[in-house]
Image 1 (cartoon, rainbow, N blue to C red):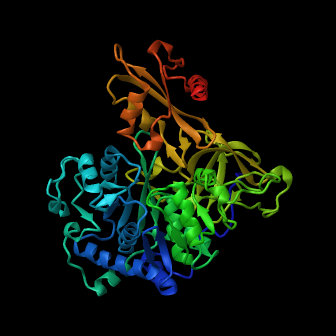
Image 2: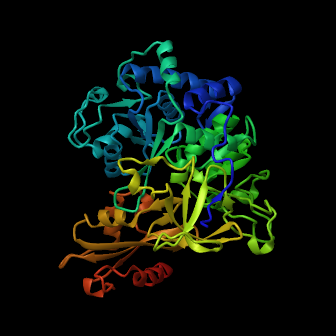
Length: 536
């Protein structure tokens, strides 16, 4: 009998109809003047977020945006980002946030992949002129800023019709709005099964994947988790809104009335000032963020109360559970810190696991090579399915994403022991660094576009703080003279900073270890790159 680990109920109900317009209006009524977002120079209440997003939603409807329209957004942490996110979602359009780490090349690619009809941006972001940045990404954009409101007709972005700058009314498109009754009628037609967000993340090929989630999955997954700590509680958010962690934080805030404290650009000293000033009680971010805060010279002298995720853990036995395993496709963690029989008080020999199957998810362990189910305890690849798992990948057929029984193969190798899962590695080449996935084929393809590069082979090697770091073996073309600095600089112009190889080894083609199949032997390359990193 195949073991399928599940914890009922698979689809817990909420008292609210799980769509963004319903939840947003309820949050504004419940929490009103409480602060939803705090930045060093800006504050946004729940009531203001609802009112401002309602006005923008009426303008979007007047411009022809509606259910299913792809709306891309390129913002840092800001009130404008949240207002835009809420406005787009509440009318049933699809939110397609773009990473702030994207290079111009990556922004253009993401707009094309998402079939964006509208692009919403600020006039400035992280100290730069955003429109100048966009013109670098898409040289065919009109030179006159007032023409960006469209209609646009571009060969490289055939679906893009308009660009609105939200903090500059002169560029934000027509000022017409629809009547309130039409907005209410539109919101009533938004269903839990409708798509709400498209999150672009590294896939197993050079082309990043687009993960789709619905209103129902997003809200049912996040609202139940929002019960503690309660309205007004301040959480420092170190996970960006364009990523699944930020999406979850927004859902939890709408459910619990939590205040999200952020910086436009992370800086440890200023972040600690903000944490102290605002009475933050928890940190939501990658482990590396907390480490950077603790390592700041001012940290030892600060009189901070205990803060979840930041306070140095007391010495003692290994924790009962480590960070639960999660991914964009599962809307965050899909394992729960509990044992089916012992609860949270597990025996010493079971400490340090990722947990067991949580609500919304089922798990199956399979042989990584054959896909055959593994009975009882053992090691294999973890598969998931369930209510909160992605409904699919954008532009990909269902059979290319799920197996015939609806299972999604995570690529995570785990050991199952007495109902608990322990992480042992990856079954794919995917690199996990800075809390994000990096697909080696994407980096290899970028490197091989650079002048003088014949081959590039990319893999992840261990790093004490980042989990893994991106490393590459590069083979120059005959007669070409390459330097590591030039390669890294060229890659930085094409890739987000966390994807740029930190360790690069130049190697002649006759020096490259090859397998009998004619493919590169990356296993043999790994110790060479690790030795190079150790000498750096």
